[in-house]
Image (cartoon, rainbow, N blue to C red; front, side, top):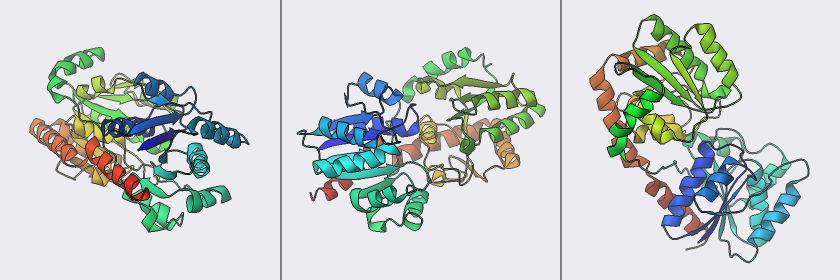
Amino acid sequence: MNIVLTNDAKTLAGGENYVLFLAQGLTERGHKVIIAPLSDSGLADKSREMNFDTIEIPYSAKGKEFKCVRLLTKKLANRNIDIIHTNTNFDRTIGAVVAKMIGCKCVASVHSCFSIRRNLTHWYRNKYLIHHFTPDGHSAKELLINKDKIPKEKVTVVHIGIPDVDRSKYDQIRPASRREFDIKQNEIVIGAVSRLVEFKGITYLLKAAKILMDQNKTCKTIIVGSGELYDNLVGEAEELGINNKVIFTGYRSDLERLYPAFDIYVQPSKDFGGETFPISVLNALSFGLPIAASDVGDIRYQIKDGYNGFLLKPENVEELTLKLNLLISNDNLRRTMGENSVKYFQDNFTLDKMISKMENIYKLLLGE
């Protein structure tokens, strides 16, 4: 199959890594993949770095949509495209129109729990131009069916899968990654990898870190990521008096170096904030970390409470602190839950499992 993957995001985050994972897996299965990212974006750079066929598109609104449609249609003409698979906002509409014009099928992945029908154009696109929707989670599927009125037969949940990591190198990487942040051998590191935006709930992690510090726990917190709340969260850590125990790394592309520095992973997302199926949690599973996470979106499918981590009430600092305390003080519990995380990941969320499900959807649409 000849497959085009589109994405209009500027920065390289979970949804953009999903495109790269999907492209990687489909290519390994012998399909021809073209990535059509936003011009001058992080995904465009990474796509070229990984030697994917890359067509940059200046996705935008305010009357420029038709320009993008014409450009992408021209670029894809005579390339025998079978599927255009869209992933975000502007590219979802542009990709659907282009699919109609060149006579191929259109699939739309949905990576958050927000409505994708905000105007008449979206309604028409969803009803007539997109042939199938593949939300990351069941929470997003319910929203598409109940709020956006998309027929349930056009919606299939495909949980994200990611490439497995080489855990044999874990012990080699860990000392160097901890030295970078001056982490002492006896200190427990609580890690979070996130866009620093409201619905990710990092403020609740900071409040829990304050309580742990007041209890004289030998731990530090590393928060990896950038976003609109970066300065506010750094300022909050200073106001709480924990800036010497909380490390903000900013955006990092070398996550495979950072996860081994962690002992515990935290995903403190808010409810009804758009969280669906975070790749950051999948990474934590694959690296064998115990996880404390809010029970929002489809995180409950990533964590079995009490088995590989704890599911928490969102925005509940007291419960988060209690579970972190339990993990910090019990080496055996951390080790057992971490081992369970690896097993749960390998049983459910490998890249191969995701590609098989997506490939089957493509084949059904093409009548194979």
